[in-house]
View (cartoon, rainbow, N blue to C red):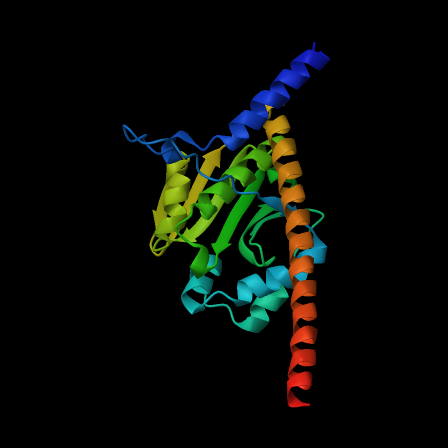
Amino acid sequence: MVTPATLFKASLNASREFFRPPATERPVPTPGLPYVAPLMVPIRSIGPSHGERIEAHLLALDAQDRYLRFGYAASDEQIRRYVSSLNFERDDIFGIYNRKLELIAMAHLAFSTNPELKSCAEFGVSVLAHARGRGYGSRLFDRAVMHARNEGVEMMFIYALSENTAMLNIARKAGATIKRDGSESEAYLVLPAADLDSRMTEMVEERIAQTDYRLKVQAKQFWDLLGAVQEVRRGVRESRERM
């Protein structure tokens, strides 16, 4: 029986675990120097109201990145069609925003439409060039795995070009089985069943990410307003100087 005390303890443990990076990403403390914990990366779920930002993110990918993400060098028009075809009621989109509210990394978790394969989902991810090297792809993968577990998914697939080493490395580190077939590779990861910890962790993570996004929106609005005021003041000062 789950009591309020048990639920609170599970929530607290989930919160602590969320702020704690994976063991493989924890730096080894240097003797004599203080330990500095890495920053938490807020990842929030994205709805249809963010369609323009999703489109802008994908259009910002260069030809090679589009090739690795979609398996072909998608044109601008093909990307727009892809975005317009996203089913936010069936699938889930996760994103990482910077302080300018630019979507710098996103993941698409697509659930199977085949009634016989309802327990399967496919994962795809993209990260803008200037935001790479920070582990965003791995973080998005972990977030998608946790959500997939809580949605009853038993197996997650990744279809990627064999030359997409970054994506395949993420899958391999997670323990996925990878099969190569010429220029293409298929990775699949068997997921454990959802439990109280996975549900509480996702709830805490989503709440933190939503709060982080609201704060970024407010900060951007403030700086935009401040910039407009400064422009007005600059214009008044220049007018006085001319007079």
